Every structure is written in C-alpha cells, then in structure tokens.
Length: 521
Image (cartoon, helix red, strand yellow):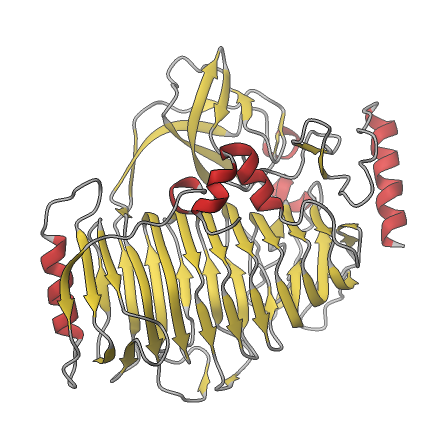
C-alpha cells in the first residue's frame, strides 16, 4: 500500500509539472540515489528540484580527514584522592603553550583510576585529553561527589555581521541545492561565510499543520517561531548565483515565507574552540536509579566548537552521555560506547548521543540500555548530521526529538530491539510537532521504522529491514490523533547499492584516500 501510494504520488507529480524522471536504475540500486554509467551517483529529483543531499561534509575538517595523533606535553598519574585539580592544572599548562600547526599538545592520563569530584574543562584550542585505553585495564575517570558533567569542551561563539543583508531572489530553493540566486551578489565572494535566515511565518506553520497542535493543561501548544538560521561557506559566485561548499538541507518556499523574505548576510565567526580531542579513556558514573530531570552525572558536553573529535571512549551509567550541542560544526565522534544498566524512571528520557549542530559524524558508535533515546536531534537546526555503522541494543529509539531538524542520514545502523523514527512527535514532550524533514535512513535494520512525510518535504527509508510504520500525529488532553502521509519507502527488506551512501558520497567528492583516512577500505 505504501509503495503504491509513492508510485501514485510520483506519477501525479510528473504529470502535473511536465518533468521526466530518470530511467529506473539497474536492479539492486535505489531510484533516489543510483550509481550511473559514469560511476557517479545520480539523484532523482522531486518536482521542485529537491533530492537526497550530499552528506559527505559531515565530520572533522569537513569529512575524509584522518584524526591527528597529537604529541604528549604533560602526563598525570592517579593519586587515589580527588584528581580533578591535577588534571585541570596539566590541561591549563598545555593551553598556555604556543600553537604549532593548530595544536598545543596532549595531556595523557596514565593507566589507572582517577576520582573526579568536578568537571574537567577544555576551553582552549589545540589541546587534547588522552587516556591509555578505554577498557578496565586502561584509564578510568570515576565521577564522585555531587552530580556534574565529567568533561566539558566549550568555546564562546561570536558571530559578527560584516555586510548588509541581501534577499534570495528564487521563489523556491530546493533541499539538497548548493546554488541559489540573490538580488545582489556584488558584496559576496568565495570563502565568505553566510548566515542564511528563513523566517517562521504563520503561513508556513499552517502549511505544516502545526498551527493547531492541541491543548496542554487547557492552553494551546505552540510549535516554533522566530527564524531558522544556518551558516554556509561560499565556494564560488557567478553573477548573482551563489554556490555553497555544503548543500542546504532545507527548502525555502516564497509561497509560504513571502517573496524576498529569506535573507543572506556575510558574517565573521570567532570564539569557537578548535582542534580539541578527547580519546582513549573511560568515564564511570555512580550506578543509581534516577528520575530524569533530577541532578545528573552526565558524560561529555561540547558547545561552540569546530574541527574537534572524540575517539575510543566508553561511558558507563552516565545519564545524558555525549552531547554535541549548540555552536558545533565539523565534529567526529568515533568508536564511542555508552552502556547503561540502571533504569531511568519517569516519563521523560535522557539521550545517549545528541546532535545540535552541523557537519557532525557519529561513526561506529554503540549504546545499550532501555528507556533512553539512543540518539536525538534538537530544535531548529540544519545538518548534515550522519550516523554511520552504529549499533544500539535495548528497547530504545533513534528519534529526532523536536521542532524541525533537517538533514540527518542514518546509514548502515542496527537497532535490533528498538526503532528508528523520522516522525511527527505531535504533542509529545512540550509539543515537539514535526521533528524532522529531508532526512534518510539507508540500508539499516531495526525492529521498526516510523517514517512520516511532512508537508512539502520528504523523508526516505531505503533498503531497510524491519517493520515499516506510519504512525499518526500524537495527541494529548483528549485530542484526536492526525493521520499522516507515509515516508518515501523503497526496497523494504532488501539492501540497495551502494552499501553506504555516506562513504560513496565521500569517495566521489574526495577520492578513495578519504575512506582510508577515516578507517575504511
């Protein structure tokens, strides 16, 4: 039934617009992203020009770059007492060293157990915190005392306007596009950073069906307002056509936003902490059953950071474990594991991994446990964000969390006892509504997939193994659930080629060496 709906929708769209889609690809490939006769990916377009985007810029330094091994400058050994101050002193000493090729040096925590009553802070660029192994014979940080965050990587993002705003001239800019037109590009040049601002208008909110979410405690619930903003670097300018280095992961429709309502402004970005890594250690929190919302022992939180990485980490019994949060871009989280055995009590659930930035790659991560979100996204952000070859065990879900995140790729992931959801959360949480759009699940497996199609948008489920669901929009306070359109479901139960969309896109953009750089043949 779902496949028939999709075929009918495509046929109607083709007849209505006069567009012709490319011929069906060879057997075993996706119609939406197929390897053509020239060996390159060819993408099927929706009537407005939208298509599956190139996600390959997700990751450290924009993807395809090997994580560095930074030389040691200080070493710390465990004292048997509170080691927070000793570790922080070593970090501060390295932070005072001059940068060489962007790096100052690494602080190495020798094998053993470190008791930490406070948060370890990394706030200066070019500093790495490294252990000597993440297993029980390596380096272990045991969180002690009052609840706190074990490690925090934090800059202080400052975005300054350096040019007057200009308007986007196109009446429609499709998702996946790298080029659009502005009314006057004379002040824009290759290498500039642009802030692209999309207003949240009442017409667009109504079109999305989010103008009447329902009542909570007798009061109307609201979705989003204000603006949706994303930063992109300019690759080239020709006339009034601006080409970006990284595709847009949302669409911009003047029919609902207003003609000339989308603005583009040159900005200067500073204050992000850069070239910071945390690697090869284990963080252990006290084992305790908690009600989510009470003070937590959390793992690692990163804010206002660029070109940073986490590698070979283990988090045991941390409540919210890894947060790549606001102001982050070009981040890699590689071979990092979260293990939770102690139950979480209450309606709300914490997250094992969280993304709230852009160009973020989660590569070969794992999590285990019940009543958590294995992975979630936050509100009003635009990727790309990629989950690549990840495995999550337990009765939990990968689930974009709230209020319109766009540009997520879930590629070759396995959730045998839980779900992968690209959905409308409706009145769940604080009225999260449409949580996700323009996103793809590719060659993954799960107990279930819950994939909805937002108005004027697409979510794709391609080559996946598991029950395909089309849940209604959840209601609250005796409200009625709303039926929704299913996602773009293709090749259910049978994987397609290429085996990994992200790796194929990365290889096509940067060559096969880029795959070797990140640990793939």
